[in-house]
Image (cartoon, rainbow, N blue to C red; front, side, top):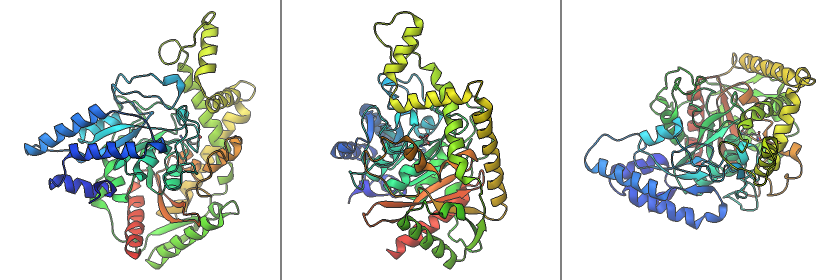
Length: 481
Ligand code: GLN
């Protein structure tokens, strides 16, 4: 039996029935990590910590003690999430040797649920990117076809799940960084409602848009993981919402009859690759045949979402990244002449080109002469997009569209063209601007065998509707295979 290929729920059951111990499973995962090292999915591993956690959980199980929901299950977290005693690099030279002095709430919740954290996933530097080629530690390779990018910025988190290095992982999504790599790698990736998961201990990119979420091989696994990491954390993150955390797994519906699925034509225009379009149309037909009602909705401002997103996110990044000055922690340039020179040299040498581009863009749009023309206008666009989504959701329960207009692109294909790179997330950024939850699930593949992702969007706090639709699709299409 290949334990590593099982879903999180299946492996949980194997652990519960003592067919395998967590220690054995953890060792298998580390062997798999070594065997698939070429993918460059991880920045670092914490083998000693993982094995000692696994042994503790095994012992607790032996003693008949109460165990958490993820007891003994190996997982991986993105390298912008702090875990005490491990390096948290954000895939930046700036933080290459930074060791976390504390643990992020989401990581702590995994540990409290008795999960085994194996290591930290590679990413685009400070989560800026769509291909994982902006990492100071080299690109991640797509596990389906190594000539292609895995997507970004959480490319490592998607890859480690697809490559069976672990059973689920955490990523972050500011403009698509969970859903785009999930789509490119053929796994399930959810960005929850803004405020569902605490951001405490997660290195900020654009604080008003950043959200932690889950990669998994099945929808039900994703629901369980979200249940574990969600919840208010007002003491540490005031934007974490005081919302009850539903039992997503128990509430999973097996039927979609009468469910209203919104389809906005703006997601299906000529920018869409024909194979992606075909795959999405097949999925919509499938839903209709199974009793769902397709409803036309309108999102007229969708085409300006990307511009607004890159203005707002860069403005916030500029402010968040001001702390990296070479004084208190992180990279410090040698041979400097006074404090200004120290800042200048540390930031010049410590940050990669994309991060510098965002800092310049952010400062530009915030500068007194341009604030109204760019930043204020972008915030207005954000309001309009929020309203358009609110109106659309008066007519439907979920909306469905492609996650990305194409399948994965080749390594190096867009590195010289930042605008082309930015346009890879035209379908994902509007959801962050509107603070909604959305998931990417696999819904087919193109002629080259590359995965196609379908995006399911819901109203704020209604992740349940996403899980229901996605689970129905996954289970029915699995049976059909
Ligand atoms: N690709 C987008 C960007 O580069 C999204 C990144 C993210 O969601 N962290 O900003």
